[in-house]
Length: 543
Image (cartoon, rainbow, N blue to C red; front, side, top):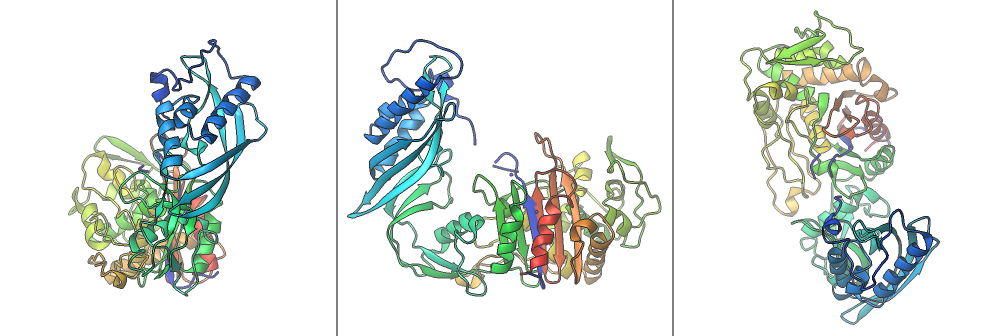
């Protein structure tokens, strides 16, 4: 993943992704400039972890300088004085935080917890602020000094790399975001919606009709990234913003993603494209459910099967032999180790068992070309054209036209194919209805957005895809995850290897009535093991 998603539900499409690889970086400036700080105190060169006295002395000196607003001196007790001085200076000058009092707790080895109490004062308004954080004291690599291991979270626990603190008149008025039933959506009630609500405020605060207040915010690096409010000094008047979110589906999604770290989920309504739920369980605040980019594994076989049917290569009941291996331009592809070969398999059978070799062998048939899967994705499923306007930043999927082994890998959701849970929820929605309806979180009427369009599928193709997904949910690889769900259900499982990850990403997408969902997780296993239960939980409780 660029930068690292998986109530009775009647009438909607749901998608979940868990995981996200490659989404903090370690700053090595101190190793190049002599471990940062120059406090002016010569130190005897030592080695090994700092002792109890050193931890106490270093942290006490750092806290004392910080309390007095002496940013340069405080930074001198860290192993990255340049970055520390910049953020500590902003703490006083830009965030307007004064009267700082830091109370250290009992050290645990080289880690020191502490409480910060202070006042934020700006434009005649002031409010108290208090929070807890911690720091670690380490041995300087070149000087041997005991130094604070610099991280932005030393200043505030919610700060990450390149973040800063600012107090000012709000750039955007506050909003009162409400769900499709008029229920207010708050970070307190739906924690993983926090980044989404911040993004909605940044884009629609003015259109919603509110007036700005004065706030202390975390300003994140990167164009278009919304500020995160921390403290309100003067309340603005919130404007009301109606979203497509279903509070019931959202509550279920919030609970479901907590089961697995680095997980994300999206639920959409196939008949309209409305997003019913979006939830992430991540430590970095990244909305991977909408913006994630990862290989979707065998959930991609929904789209590949559509390509095979639309191009007359085979049909649901047509041949799709499943041998042990398949060779494409010198590269050998295999199935799961416990999968028995079946040379007489139909497409439906190979789909519900998720036979890789069946799909690899069929993509060599005429009239298929290197561009066929790309054309199917763009023209039928509305993917990969960078024109989705969901209401906030989102990824539209990517299915590039490629040759060589990547053409075969793409057919089973590996190679250069990239998707998000939002994309896979949409793929399921298109597959079961035959129509592409671009997912959206905010009604386009609010700001006159033109939603993306695509040709969609022939009725016969959609009917076959839906039936194959039904078989997968009731007799195939998704059967265990979907067990106990009533009504019209269908699903597809997937797993995808990611470079540098010990475990594969687990994907799952499914539907129940008019709800579709997709999920991804880094917990490994097949799609039904980790992402599957997330999707099923949301489908079970409803939208």
